[in-house]
Length: 474
Image (cartoon, rainbow, N blue to C red; front, side, top):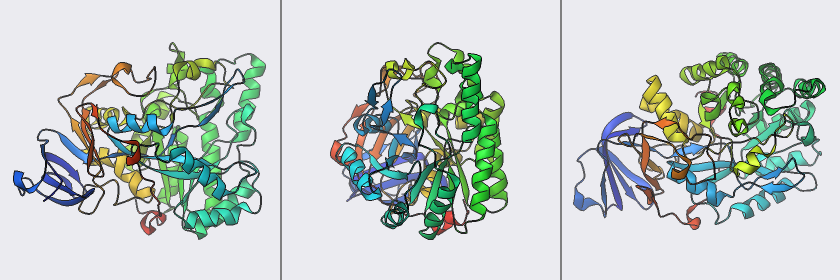
């Protein structure tokens, strides 16, 4: 007997959308069969989701939980922990998060990994994984440490090509060290995940605007501009051309120039992938002028309508494969404390409404297929990040991570209905569906708004980048 049977006339599977019975046993999908194949006596519980959309649980490949955040007043805060963010994610139909291990000088990579696991152990309601993050001038011994970590199931390494703000000196990795990291990552068959902005341009623009007295955060798009993204992406790609076997993933692509650089590289057969964020797809630099306009900001800045249009085009033609959040869950007071171009807090409170917002914008307003939408919020992240088909698929043998979207729940988002912080940049947006059920490894954790998850539920995911992804097939 199965533990759970979910039946719907719209199940999004790797083979397409069909009327199916999804049978679940011991946390795994045991069978996906034509609707009506199994009877009510074949499972301990049967859920009839007819009229609803049954899809793989969402995957957010870019979040920051319990994150070190220095404030303009000199204080240090940590953003909300995984217990808060993962609970909100499950309410929104997302079942897997990827955060970061931040290596800092004075530690080994292995020590940094162990410390980050302490932050998350029994503190996350959903499954999760980590990217490694290196910064600053890299000591010679770090390259062997990276090799060990890559072989141990931590196959993605984040690199900054800018310090981001003048107060964060030491974040950027110079291109000689990036070259050395690329060689290690290529040898160990991993992937580098890049924050690509040109530091010379960014710091020049900080100096220029401060000199001119234009220090308000509403000018951030001039500092973190499209030229910076263009120069950085193309320099990184040129370096990658000289490192056989390297695979790249550009995080938070924000500009038309970044889309163009990735598109051209992919046309040459390079294994390069692009991620954008839902705030780039739905806000522009004009939104900085709204009350509390800092709530729409992350680094790099939101940009022009023309940039946003090209990001959407990238999701259509396959240049952009994933839509993430760059989640930084903090209070409105923390988010709006900085009011200058050089002290505004980045990140976004958005992990909960991401799936519903993207369904609305993609399927509801732009006519994307359900398969395309699911690729962008779940399946592609699983493929690229080395979790497929365990995650991101409704298929026999996959983890039973399932979200059920109810199109009859057409509503306007209010912060009161969400489960993260005291504000939401998404308040007032209409959505054409909302999750009515979330299942994680076979356990119903959210049903009609009622949460039944436990902090012991979340498991760490050791990953391996597939040969398909390293060959640039997706």
